Structure formats: structure tokens, C-alpha cells
Image (cartoon, rainbow, N blue to C red; front, top):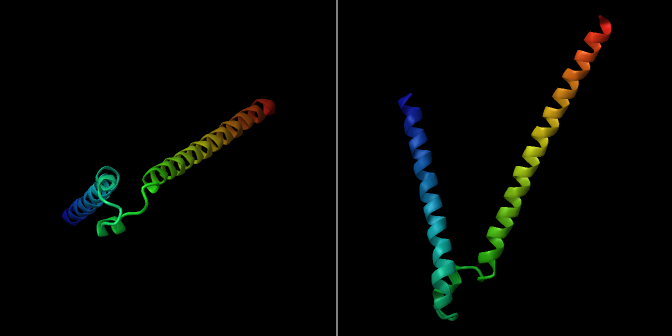
Length: 96
């Protein structure tokens, strides 16, 4: 049980470090880099600024599509189960 707890903490720490790194990189890219000269070598560490808008928009659309697909699949399966139960109930009443 202790090994599982340690692994959970290690995974959580790794996720926190990755999220913090991505947040810091994006913040520097969007808020500080517009004030740095275009010929400066640091500019080569970052993609063009237009991607600072495109990437979040793409991720939001992709996330919305995944959530919408998941919800539609759950609703379709739920509706099928209800229809099957109603059909079985109707057959049971017909047999009486």
C-alpha cells in the first residue's frame, strides 16, 4: 500500500512539474517575447506568435469534440438500454 501511495505522489509531482513548465513557457512566449527584438537568439526558442492563439483554440475545439462525443455515446447507450427495458416490459405484459 505504501508503494502505491509513493507512486501516486511521484506521478502527481511529475504532472505538477510538467504543468508548471508548460504554463511558464506559454506565459513567457505570449507576454514577454513580443517585447524582445525579432533578431535576438532567444526568439528561436519559441514558435511564431500566431501559434499562441492557434494552439489553445485547437485544443479547446478538440477537447469540446471529445467531451461531446463521449456525452453522445453515453446518451445513445442509455437510450438503447431504456428501449430494451421497455420492449421487455411490453413483451412481459403481452405474455400475461
